[in-house]
Image 1 (spheres, rainbow, N blue to C red):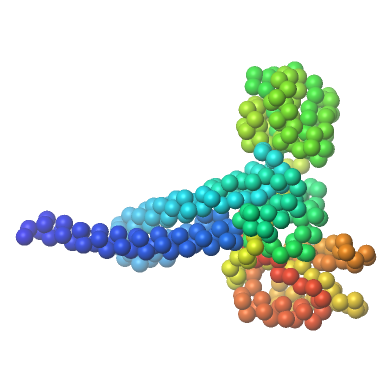
Image 2: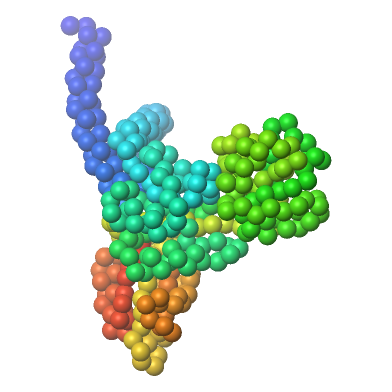
Length: 366
C-alpha cells in the first residue's frame, strides 16, 4: 500500500471519528440552546467563545497548525450558533409597545431569532411570561434621562420573574419624513412627548409645530400613512426603515448620553456568576427591612462587609401598604453559590421580604 493510500485511510478513519464527535458536540449545543431559552439568554456569548478559543488553541503546540485550528474552532462555533438558532426559532419574546418601538428594537438586537410578540402594556407582557405564553419579556428598567420605570420595578418585586440579562440601548432621535422630502418643507413634527422634550432645542430653532403621539413608532406610522411632505416624525433610524421613511437629520436629541436599560425577564434564574472583577457582572436585590431603628443601615453594612459595591440604591412605595417602602439594590460583581447563601442568610436577619431578583451581565446594544 502506498503512502498516499495509507494517508487516505487514516483521514477516512479520523473523519469517521470526527463525525461522531461532531454529533456529540451538537447534542451538547442543543442542551445549551434549551437552557438559553429557559433563562432568556441570546445565542451569542462572545466572552465564552473567546475563552473556548484561547483554551483550545493552547492544546495545539505547532504555531502554524495553531493558526489554522483557531479558524477551525471558530467556524465550528459559528455552525453551532446556527444550529442553536434553528432550534430556537420558536422562541417567543414579549415586549410592550408596537412595531418600531424602542423595546421592539432592543428585543431584536438581543435575540436574533425567535418571534417578538407585542403587548399593549408592561403588565400584559410580564404576565405572558408568567403564564408560559412567552419564553421571556424585554422590558425597560430605567432611562438615563427620565429615571427608573416604576411599574416594571414593582412587578419585579411582587412577581415571580427574575432578570437574566440587562442591555443598554442608546436612544438616538432622528428627524424622518417621506422619501424625497426636503427638510425646508417641514412645518410640523409628531412624536412621543418625551421625545419632543428631548429634542426641544432643535424643534424650537427649526420653528416646527409640535404634535404629540402615543409613541415614536405610531408617530412614524402616521407620517408614512398621511402622505404629507410637510409632516415629519421624531423616531429612531430603525423605526424609520420599518415604515419606509427617510432620515433627514440624525441625532437631534440634546442629550448625547440618553440610554434606556432593558431587562430580560424569565421564569428561571441564570447560572450564578462568580467573577467579582468582571465589570459587566451585576446582581440585584429587592427587600423590605424590619420596622426597627437602623435596619436599612444594617442591611447596607452587610453588603459592605462582603466587599460589595452598590451601583444603585433606591426606595419604592409598596402599593398595598401606605407609607411603607421596599428597596432596590444593584451591586457590582457577582457572588459564588456559597457567598450568596451567606449574604442572604445574614440579610434575612434584618429584612422581612428578600428577593435575589437576578444575576446578570450588563451589555451595550450596538
